[in-house]
Length: 109
Length: 112
Image (cartoon, rainbow over all chains, first blue to last red):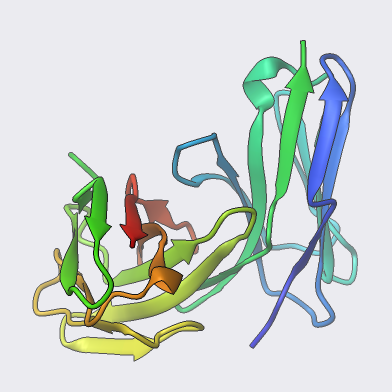
């Protein structure tokens, strides 16, 4: 089945710095979702992208879907301590989701 | 509206014991899935169901059984627990016209 590679695995930033995580596939994707998991918590849906070149924003978070629909990114501007957690990308087909391994973000105050 | 509930929250088993992890949803969703998450790793699909009476294997099904007798419930059975099954188990549900997964709070399982 389809797989997604996510990089980096870990990212440690100073509060106020920016953060980006990338998700890449060797095949064209019909959709991609992004989730956030706080330490000790469960994954929570953030957003879905379906269109080539799509860009969506949620406050300080910017999500992009590549023109070829083979990659996606999540960018956080001016990180805050509340942004800590693991961010996952996922692709879903008929109720089955395949998740990337996630990027764990730590923020130093 | 509770969403997705899982019981128990924590469980310690001895090697060879069996147990059932419970999952229930009140969202009237057809699709339900079980994932396991190991430290530093993503979520791996164990089994999933597209509706009552229909189940199928995911990426890592060995050692686990599922059944789906109702829309609401999707229990996961460990037949003979092994230390390699120490993990956090998440149940999730998706609506038929959506790709959004709604996760339960998880069950943390330790097999000694």
